[in-house]
Structure formats: C-alpha cells, structure tokens
Length: 325
Image 1 (spheres, rainbow, N blue to C red):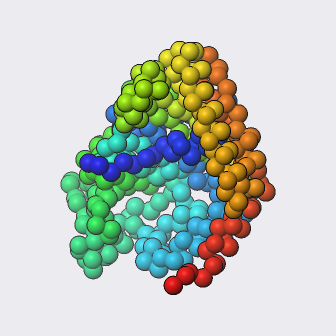
Image 2 (tube, one colour):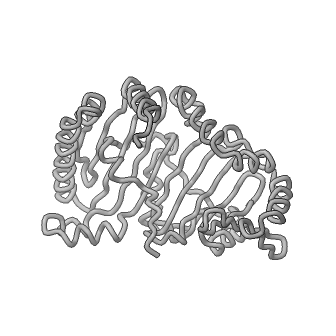
C-alpha cells in the first residue's frame, strides 16, 4: 500500500535539534510485533502533568473533544476519560506498510462497560462498527472514516489498535505475557533510548530513505552506513529534545554531521527570510548543536517557554482571523 504511517518525524526532529543522554534504558512494550522497525512512545500522563501540559495541552484536548459531540458520547458510554485514564501510547510499524502498524494504549479501562456500549452502538450503526467474536476474543472494526481500524481489549489496562485485524489478533494471542522478540538491531536501538523521557523514539533507517540516499550522488556512500535514529523529548516548562543518528563508523558519522550542518544553515536562512516566524524561531535554530561521538551524530537543542508562548499566541491569532471570502 502507498500510505506511510510516518511514525518517526525525522525532519521535524532534525530542525528542533536533539541529543541522547540516556538516564534509564527504555523497555520495549511486550506487545510490539517481532518485525517492528520503528516505535514512538508517548507518556501521556507525564506530558499532561508537566507545567507545559497543564498550561496548554489539557485545554487543547478538552477543546478538541468539545468539537466532536460524537466522540464525547462514545467516551461517556465507554467510561473512558482520556485525560485521566490513559497512561502511555505506543505506536510502532514495520517500514512503510501501514497495515503492520500498531497502537498500544496503556491505562485503566472497563472492558465490560465499553463492550456493552459498543454492542449498542453497533446495533444502531451496523456499517460504522462491526464486532467480530471468536471464542473468548472480541475485535471491534471501526469504519467511521471509511478506513477500517480494528481494536480490542487485551485486558483492563491495555487496548490494541491496528489497520490489520491479524495484527490485533496476534496481540490478543500474545497477551503480553512474554518480552517482545525484536530484531537484534532494533532491540539495541530501543535499549539506548531514555525511557524516562515524556516522548522517546527508536527506528532503523527506513528502506525508502536508504533508497533516496543511494539515488543521490552526494549521499550514496551513506546509504548502507547510516543504521538508525534514537531520541526523546523531555517536557517541563520548555521542551528539551534529543536525537542521535547511528552509523557504522566514525568517518560516516562525520559525513552525516556535515549534511546536518548544511540543513541547519538552510533552516537558519529560511527563518531569517520569514518575518512572521524569524524572530521567534531564529534563536531555536541557532541553538541547535551538531556533534559526533564515535559512530553517532548527536543534535541538541531546546524550545524555551517564551518561544512556546509566542508560537501559541501566533496560532491563536491566526485562528481568530476571519476567513477571506
């Protein structure tokens, strides 16, 4: 299929500037598929309870729910409060095949209440929600946006979602009773991530990116020597973001550092030429640090509280402007 889940926003991470100083090795969720090659984990509870979360994100979630009466009804019927019941969200995939993508939601749920609400909803909306039962397992098929999404309760603390019913069925069979059996290279990246961060990610270099590198004369020598990325975001009053690009040797790391340095210079020219964002984002781009550490290329940076405040005000002002006819 042509759709790509884009679970690891590399370009944004590079522009923000990141570094890796692991305080606590991350652990792979036990329900991760064995063929996973990229994962992003969001500690929802940690993000919402941070000063930044309390200042902006909680209200954003409430506003989003307020715009969807149907979502409010579903949440009320199932007894799920996204602001209090969800602890972490893990999104993983294998390359660009979106059908292998999986979302694992950890928290506190009431499967019986949710199931009863789903049964009632399915009776009234048989084309939007279908319920598949196989013995003691129940899988829900949501067709609300014309793109099937399957989901199931693994237990009272875990929900699994995927575009593939087979992926959900595999998670139910697994049950999370044993550690995930990941590819050796991918497992090594996950272990390097800082599990204490509000957001952390790890990914092997996608084959699509590798092909793009190989097709360019300036980067073809890097195609088989850049192995992956690992990083995280710490959320407090500001954002401390981090990324490391892993390579096979120090010479390749130096070459990648040069490429990222050029990207930083391009980003600086872009913000300097844009009056609306130049003054706000200029210092952020200038604060990006690119360095090499053996076979890694690290990027470090910070989005200060005052910059976040300015960006939020600019977005609010843009949203409040009357639309031109």
